[in-house]
Image (cartoon, rainbow, N blue to C red; front, side, top):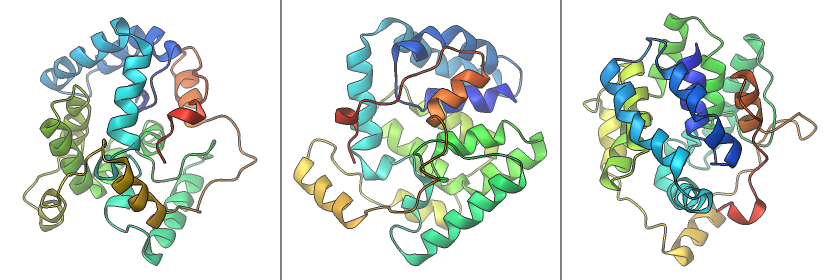
Length: 234
């Protein structure tokens, strides 16, 4: 399903190659899986990616997703933190990927949302919906936090909430929504958080290209280079 792959691409670090791929992403979102209103809501982000300065786009992405723990795209960060349960959940998810013939490539963790979406693009609709639904409460929280920051990335998470048929009324979602947002500009506080949340679990270091390259390649898009090390917030 190209829609999942397109949404995955939109949640990767912006590059000139991603900008060039916007027409292919737009076409994929029109395949019919998303309700038209959700596809239309993503259009402002697509236009920004097409027209805005790449360095401004990259800075915004880093401030949102790399320097804000409450907006981390590593899903298990929101429910397990650095408890032992997180390692077990990582292993279970990695086994799910392998059972589905999906080889995790690059430096991203198995619970990285773009990685999960790339995997879901290879599954049948019912299975993809069920797996995404397991993370529904996290998606709801991410969507709401992005809305609070008035960012054009919010409709991407809204679309995922719709695909998962998730609701903010579950107890798990209410707990996440009750958390205070962190401040991406408070670097001292954020450094302290990330120092306490060091992640050592990862894919095979000898694996292939980063996930953003894999996603774009499978969409017949230009390949994106890996994110510049100085732009990484963690």
